[in-house]
Length: 242
Ligand code: NAP
Image (tube, rainbow, N blue to C red; front, side, top):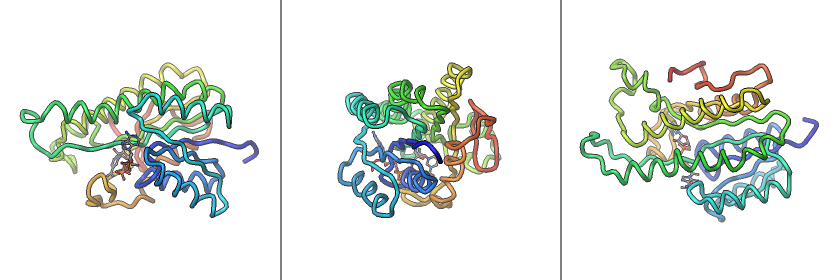
């Protein structure tokens, strides 16, 4: 790559976000390890630097607007632009009980991170994304956010009806569609990725896929050519129904 390209990954201290950060660093990006834990974020960034890659820790809690603004200022001062934003930070709090019994606090907390947090990171970073030549934004969603799949009794995960988590990812997909629409006349592309059921802390490592498999579609969408799609929802096999 000729010019230095900057990628910010939220929740990059572990799981899928960490794998995506490693792969983008290997592709030559300067990766900004967004994490709310200074110890874990620095550990990951220093590890990549020791491997000869370009990385730095950026403190960011997606539910804390001050931390997002501070991250924006730091990126602005040091790099002046942002080429890739991976909105990866996410939580799953549901216990699997039916909607009639779900505590509204579980919905509120889940949306606070997965939806409102992602929204405020995206909105705050947008001026920096506009300063890049052709920025890419990937919202890390889930097949569980697909209303079409959720309504299909034959869907592999039809029984996984996690009201807060699933609906937060449906709403995240709505952000993808609306931001992509606003930005359609620009060179910025915005897409949702479904990494698949992956063994991470999020699901007590019950997932059947590896983080390497999960990262594939995210990295692909982060590095799309100018002819690539925007405003879509994809897994590694192609489009996922909304
Ligand atoms: P994970 O290992 O639990 O990682 C989640 C990451 O998000 C952690 O780094 C966590 O930081 C961070 N995070 C949570 N809340 C945050 C906040 N308020 N501010 C900043 N960072 C925050 O889970 P994962 O499976 O890699 O999940 C990554 C993304 O993939 C999530 O959006 C998830 O919904 C999505 N996804 C996962 C699967 C799957 O099967 N694993 C499937 C589909 C989609 P801490 O270490 O500080 O908690």
